[in-house]
Amino acid sequence: MTYLLALDQGTSSSRSIVFNALGQVVAQAQQELTQQFPQPGWVEHDPLDIWRTQLATARQAMTNAGISAYEVSAVGITNQRETTVVWHRRTGLPIHNAIVWQDRRTEPTCKTLRQGGLTACVQAKTGLLIDPYFSGTKLKWILDNVPGARQQANNGELAFGTVDSWLLWQLTHGAVHATDISNASRTMLFNVHTNQWDNELLQMLDIPTSLLPRVQPSSSLFGEVCADILGSPIPIGGMAGDQQSALFGQACFTPGMVKNTYGTGCFMLMHTGHTFQTSHNGLITTSAAQTTPQPEFAIEGSVFVGGAVVQWLRDGLHAIPSSNHVQALAESVPDAGGVMVVPAFTGLGAPYWQPDARGSILGLSRGSTLAHIARAALESIAFQSAALLQAMSRDAVAAGGVAVAELRVDGGACVNDLLMQFQADLLGIPVIRPAVIETTALGAAYLAGLATGVYQNKAQLSALWQAEKRFLPQMPPALAQERMSQWEHAVRQTVLKPAA
Ligand SMILES: Nc1ncnc2c1ncn2[C@@H]1O[C@H](COP(=O)(O)OP(=O)(O)O)[C@@H](O)[C@H]1O
Ligand SMILES: O=P(O)(O)OC[C@H](O)CO
Image: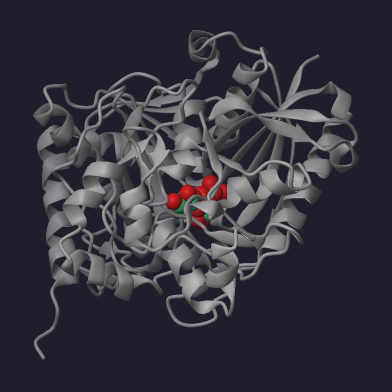
C-alpha cells in the first residue's frame, strides 16, 4: 500500500493527515495552536509551538494509521500563508514570535508606501495590494525592531521564511532553506511573472537577499525528512500555501474553475491558467500551486469572518452548544424573518475592503428570536461568498472568458447543508461538495505524490476527484437578486460612519 503524509499547519491548529494513493483519508491528528495578542491588532504564534504541534500530529497520524515511515512515499506541506518567521541560521532559534497574517501592526509602513505611489508597481509585479496582510512589511518590522537583527541580517546570520520554510528547515535539521512559488507569491517581495525575488521590492523594504529561501515549484523535491524525526527518511515532494493547495486538491487546474473554502474565514480562488489577470473588482492575483517552473495564476478573494460567525453564535451569544447545532437552530424558523447580520467584526475584506467597518444586526422586529439571528448569521457567510463570486465572474467576462459555471466547496463549514443550499440559491449555479473535504491537505499530498512518481499527471488527479453532493439552485433568480440587493444595502448601512 502507498501512503502520503500531509502536514497542514493552519492558523488555529496544526493537523496531519495520512492519505492512500486514491486520495482517501486513512487517519489524522490535530492539535490547537495558542494565539497570542500582545497588543490590539497584533497576532503572534510561537514558531517552536508551531513545530512542536506539527511534529506531534505527524507522529500521531501515523500511529493512528498503524503505519511506519517506511510505508510513506512522500510528505507534503501546506500552511497558513504570509505568517512570517525569522530565525538564526546557526542556532535554528527564532529571533521573534511569528507575526501572523492577521496582524495589522505594519499599516503605517503600508500607508507610507501607498502614499509614495507604489501601489501600481507592487500590483504589476506581485498581483497584490499593499497591505499588512502580506509578509514583506512584517519581515521589515522584525529587522527594524528586534535589537541587533538588522546587523545580523547584513552579516548573513539570519533566515526568513513563511511557515512552510520554517517546517522544512526543522524537518531537515537546517539542511534546506527553501519555499515554493505559491508561498513566495504572498510575501510582496516576489515577482510572479519571473518567479524570482524582486530586487526593486527588496530595496523598497530594505530586505537583504541573504535572508531569503530558495524558491521551487510547489511540486518538486525539497529535501528529505531526517530519519530520527519520523523513523526513517521520507522525501518532501510538495509545498503550497493552504488556499492554493486546496485549489489543487479540488482538481481546479484549468481556467475558470473555482473553489471556496469555508473555514474560519472564506477563501475563494479561481484558476486563470497561465494568464496573469488583474481584477477590476477588488480581488487580488496570486500564483497557483505549480508543478513546473512555468507561472500559473489564480484570482483570489477573502472573507475575514466566515465560519467564525458560527463560533460567535456559540461563544459570544451562547446560542448553540457547539458549531454543528447551528443548522438545527437556523432550520427551526422558515427564514431569517427580515434579519440581516453583517459580521464585519474585523472589518470587511474583498470585495469591499473596509478595514474600519464593524458588525451589525439589521431588521430586528419584536418577533425576532435567536433562531432568526442564527439563520441570518449563516446566510451572511453565503452573501459574502456570493459577492466574491460575482466579482470573479465580472472579471472573467471582462477578460473575454465566461461567468463562473459551478463552485467546488470545502472547509469545516461546508458540511452545513442549509448553508450550501442557500449558497447555490444565491449564486444560481451548482455548488458541489466533494467526497473528501480535507482538500487543503489533499492538495499537498497530491503535489508530493506527483513529485515522487506516485502519480504521473494531473489528469489522474482529476479522475480521483469525486462529488459527494450537488446543491442545485432552487430559488427563483429574481428573488435571489432581491436578497443580494438587501445584503448590499445592509453592507452600506454597516460601513456608513455615524455623524461626528
Ligand atoms: N455545522 C457547521 N455549520 C457551520 N459552520 C461550522 C459547522 N461546523 C464547523 N463550522 C465552522 O467551521 C470553522 C472550522 O473550519 P476549519 O476548516 O477547520 O477552519 P480553519 O482551517 O480556518 O481552522 C469554524 O469557524 C466553525 O465555526
Ligand atoms: O489557516 P487558515 O485556514 O485560516 O488560512 C489562512 C490563510 O492562508 C491566510 O492567507
